[in-house]
Image 1 (tube, helix red, strand yellow):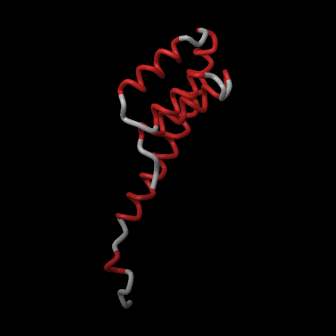
Image 2 (cartoon, rainbow, N blue to C red):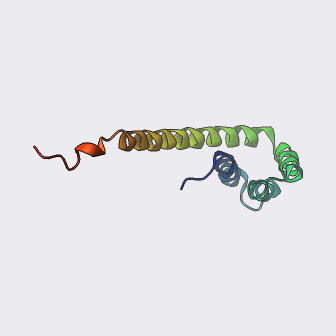
Image 3 (tube, rainbow, N blue to C red):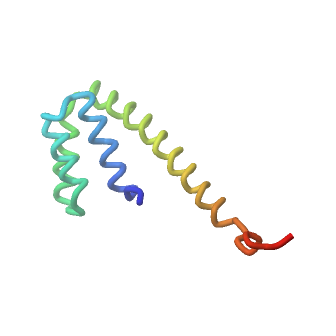
Length: 98
């Protein structure tokens, strides 16, 4: 089963933050915590800490996150296409005698 879009988005953002500023940065920790709960206060805290990262680093994080998001989107679309193909199989002909 694949990860819900919300959790996947947070995971992509957290990974991108870790790549640019490291896993010890409070923004990374806050984003990881916000991903694990639906608490709006945690999301605001993560947003505030993310806003404290320098503009240059945020631009790099955005670029990395967008690249990862496009890869994830393509992977999900391919997965959805495979599911449609399987659902389109005519199982009635599977055991048909010719």
